[in-house]
Length: 283
Image (cartoon, rainbow, N blue to C red; front, side, top):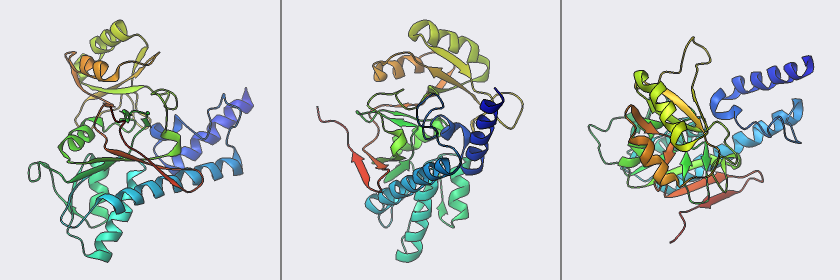
């Protein structure tokens, strides 16, 4: 028991030092119950590999989809940091005229820290492109997003963009949702409605719904919109378009972390240093 607790503390400390706990701890390099657990040097190597994969995906998306005079939606999370790094680099080197619209407080700070032009949807309600990460991507390009709590603004900005491009590392690639990401579907709710919403979801779709609790404060996570987040751990694969619509119809639900039919292309940074792209299936 003491050994297991020691291992858990070591892994958690590593995640805290590197990136957002909720977004990355669901993955590790392998689950603790799997055969391959990243520890000490092996763990550090796996983390470094994942970070390099994020960087390659972010750079590829910026290089292939952002042009001069573009208005760009800037996503949130650990992978988007690399995309903003590359965007700022290109702006300096190529003297590009770029306007950035953030999806969160974190994105806003990234834009300002890199000296990029900050704006909003009031001034630019139509964006040329939005680039964002994902917690999981299935074979049909359906996404789970919201591990970092920014799902509502992320979906609004993505919906305003002519092109929505997703960047991720190899750990986020799944044939079906739930294969890799074990934290469930995030659902932003009005605080007074979190109990009835949770009960309604479990009654209709099964699974478990939990109120997301904060890590460094007492009580629940509070979004940039002053709402709560529920995490729905589903038990089986669903028709995600129908589920998304049904959950959004429950009074008190603000938005879901299901992004269905929105992504135009996904860039995956792979373990071997390559980039894999995925487009929506042709029906």
